[in-house]
Amino acid sequence: MNLNKISQQYLKSQVSGYVSSKMETEDLSQYVRLDLGENLLGCSPKAFKSLREMALFDFNYYADPYGKDLKKTIASLYNIALENIVLADSSNEIIEYLPKMIISPQEKVLIITPTFFRFIESSLSSGAEIIYQPLNEEDNFILTPSIIENIIYKINKLNIKMVWLCNPNNPTGVVTNINLIETLLKKTSAFVVYDEAFYEYYDTANLNSGIRLIKKYENFIVLRTLSKAYGLAGVRLGYAIAHKKTIETISRYQNTLLMTSGIIQKIANSAISDQNWLKNSVAQIKFLRDKLFAQIAKLTNLYLTANSNTSIFLLKHISKDIFVELKNQKILTADFRESTGLEGKRYVRVTIGNEKQNKQLIKALQKINFFYPSS
Ligand SMILES: Cc1ncc(COP(=O)(O)O)c(C=O)c1O
Image (cartoon, rainbow, N blue to C red; front, side, top):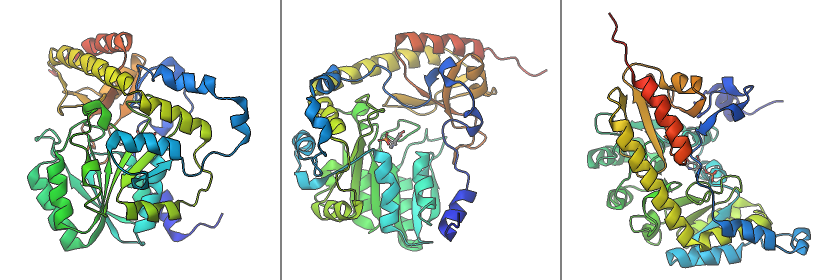
């Protein structure tokens, strides 16, 4: 296969994902899976019900290419117009095509670290040059006002075309105030992708969401997914919210007429309509998180570092390789040991589980916590 230069270059790069490629051949069913940030409490029963109720004849028709019913539900939830929304088969799909639309080869994008590794992959496969902006471990990985000022400086000085931000950030679960993001939008003309994949865990009322800035700034896009708090990672549905003009351009570029299966649109519609279930599930996760964090706080050789507002959190041991130690006890976490910005710091990202899974985790952590000082 003769690849173009960008693809050749991209395939040479090694971006660290969550599960090491060395595990491809392992039977992952032997592990308690706390690695993928899924909602381990499940999804709204109404999502299943919509599937059962779907008449057979639905399957022989193409879906509504505009996904109007689903868009109406999303629009009424956020008090926006249908023209502010674009649907996709996952938010990963949108992450993949945005830099291809915006970046010419060798143009610059800015990515904070640590953050979601797909921003890096997608930028590199578009031929972009990446400028990294580290968040500091000493500041508990908070995106501080001075880091925002630094980002603004870099965008203007280096002619950066696109910025990837994630709120709450993955893997830390740390939240950024939307006013800081507005400062950035006011002072630069870079295109800002604002990924709110884990947002519902933090604020089901959407008060601090980027959505309230979309009418004002054309260079801004908010990403959401049903894979996290809605508990529908296997369904594959994501969407983007932006200014009408931005959405119009993306819709033309998307070029996937008859995309997003009608079945998936219906499941997603039922799930998003069931805000009571969402609020309940988020409250349960918060209860389980508080309980887990209080138990971890007693384990003096373990560090939580960042203050997570979501279902995921970073964890490390003062000296041990916690990824390997947990894996030996049949618990799989997301491997952040070589993740960009966290290299050599021995972090794993843990997903909050159900009561039973969390008990297993705590039991394993209690064993790992025990520290043999070197003589
Ligand atoms: C920050 C962030 N954005 C997007 C995604 C992708 O979500 P989807 O399942 O919609 O592709 C993830 C999944 O891990 C994520 O962590």
